Every structure is written in structure tokens, then in C-alpha cells.
Length: 252
Image 1: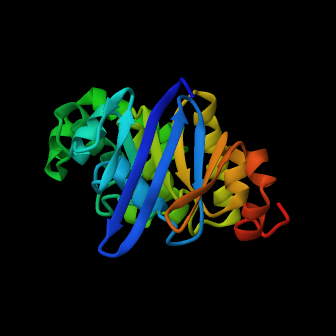
Image 2: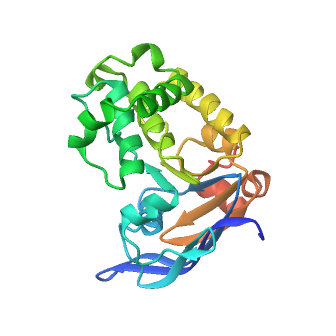
């Protein structure tokens, strides 16, 4: 892939005697949605944590946009344009939806993520307008003055997505974006992510729901026990007998 925006190159990671990642080498092409699937404990979240600098690999490197980012701090990687949306929504429950989105927008410009920056952010009309834009984009503008704690799980995920988008990601990492959602909320999230895909946004998603994976992914990497056992297009992965047996039930 000559158009790779992310390259995880020969990454290994162990925790004590437990090998979490072994010989991980994958590339994410710009403008694509790249899914990472596998059972619990396969190393998926560890891999994302390596990509955002929360965990340092034992060996290997992560290259983003042509620059080695291994060894950089998480906030430095974020400032470069790598934004992760976590499995459990990381929002400020006591703030309004608008305030939640304004905080990271202000932090992106200010260079630091501080909750006490919300009052300063509220005085910035340009930040308010941008926050309202992203809330509208995820379908939450009408609820902008609600307290975030009052939202459903699906809407909390939408709110966190807006918080991620306001940081202008070049690469958006989504950890289980539909976990715990109803089928209606899941389908709504699929349509929302398709909209961003049509705009050329590069995304990596970890997801257990194969309906979500095959609805969105251009390429799929399959992990098992910290190793890549398959990597290819959805059709290639769907047709892989080992993947069918282990992860797709042999019927997808």
C-alpha cells in the first residue's frame, strides 16, 4: 500500500510472561475504513493503545503520515491528528452536550486538554459555532443544552464522536463503536459512519458485530492470541475457512 497513512511495523509487546502482540505488521490506507476483529484477549485494544502512545511496544515502530510516532506522548500523537474514541464513552456527564464538544475544540487550539478551560471556551464564538456544527453532523444539535448524563448510550457514543471530530482527526480510531447499542442505534451509527467514510475520513474500527464490520470495512485484519491470522478485503476474509470457523460461525 503506497498510500498508507498508518503503518504498524513488526510490533511486539509482552506483559510479564504474556505475549500480547507478536509480529504485528499492518498498513491503513488513507481514506479507508480498516476493521480489526478477533475474540476477547486477541490484542486489539493493546494494538490501539500502542498506536496512540499509551503503551510502548517492546520492539517495532508505528509510523503515522510518514513520521515515526513510537516514543511520543499521547497528547503529541493526538495533536498530529490521531484521535481515539474509546469503548466506554469518555464524556463529561455534568456538562451540556455543547460544553462537552467545546472542551476538546478549545484544547486542540490551546494545546492542552483541561476541563477548567470550558469557561474560556464558552467565550469563544468560533469554537461554539464549530461545536454546534459537529453536534448537528451527528444529529444532536437540538439536544445541545441537555446535560450529557441524561443521554442514552447510543447518543453518548454520538456525543463522543462529535468530541473526536472537533479535533479534526486525520485518523480516527474507534473502539467498539456500537457496543451495548440496540439494533436501531447500531444501524443509525452505521449510517453515520458511512457518511464520514464518503467524505474520505480514514478510520480504524475494532468491532465484534460482523454486520457493522461488513457494512463499513474496506479491509479487515483478524487477530488471535496477539497474532494476525488473516488480512484482506471483506470478501477475502469472509471466504477464509479459518476465520469463518473461529469468528464468523462459518455462515457469513
